[in-house]
Amino acid sequence: MSEHLEVSFPGGKRVDVRVREFVIPTDQSLKGGGEASAPEPFDLFLSSMAACAGIYALNFCTSRDLATEGLALSLDWDRDPANPLAASVHYQLRLPAGFPDKYRASILKSIELCAVKKHIQNPPSFEILVVE
Image (cartoon, rainbow, N blue to C red; front, side):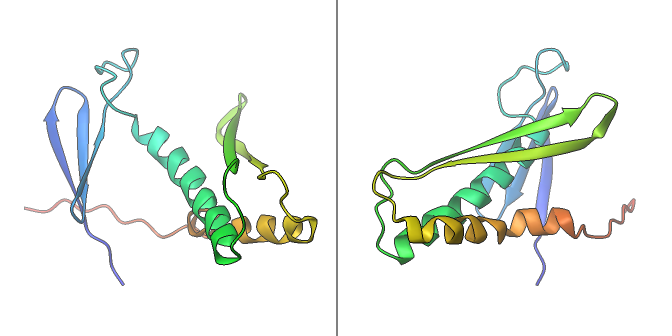
């Protein structure tokens, strides 16, 4: 299965990505020479990890008819100052009031199945070509 995304450059430091019927705008911060009109690409990378973990937690609850009111998830990205490419990801999951104790370990295991995380752990190969 293949995914095809198209990138366009609408001006300034903005870069838009079309994926299926959606256009995802990005921009650079004011410090990076942009207008800060949209998230930076790295923000979307982090957001994809958080959203993926979140959908796995949500699906876990809804598939078992468990309440989701109060369900919350946050992600912290801690970069190593000595090596900017080294980082630690920390998720914090807040369970709804009355969440059954018997499911605590299982919901964490379900979040471990996040496809974005799995692709980071098993990175794809990259090829960059110039086309005419």
